[in-house]
Image 1: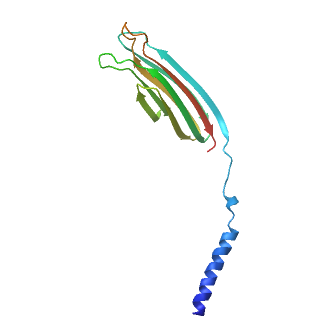
Image 2: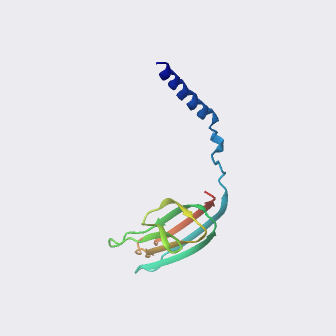
Amino acid sequence: MKVQILALVMTFLIASIGYVVYDDNSETNEEILILQEYEWMDVNQFHDTMGSGYENTTDWVINTTGVISITIDLDCFFDTQDDLTGYVNISILDNDSLVWSDTTSNSTDYTVNHAVSGDSNLTIRVRAVGSDTYPEHDFADWFVVGLTATLTNR
């Protein structure tokens, strides 16, 4: 019985020493640093009643390792004509590899986080299809894409 009590006391003693010696400040609490910030906007209003396409791209060359947080604000209007509705497709590519993409005809917001390492060529691509509305309507199809991006060290 004495051996069992001694083993139990030793277990508690070792556990308490481990708890006291453990320094939670020894973990890396490296501050998150903003390395780069980027803003971009794209706007288009369609003027062809037969429907037309649109494409625009922008590139952001990143020469460091980190995490990029991208916020996309899409405001748009696409009128339904004969069961056809225009749309906007926003895609993010990293060195020509698709990272994220979405297609919509509605105003919406997106947040995309992506880890980059070294020589990344980030491409933001906007493709859209739309048309001018019928004469009895006031507005043609249109969209506004606002993008902000923050590159941090982690």
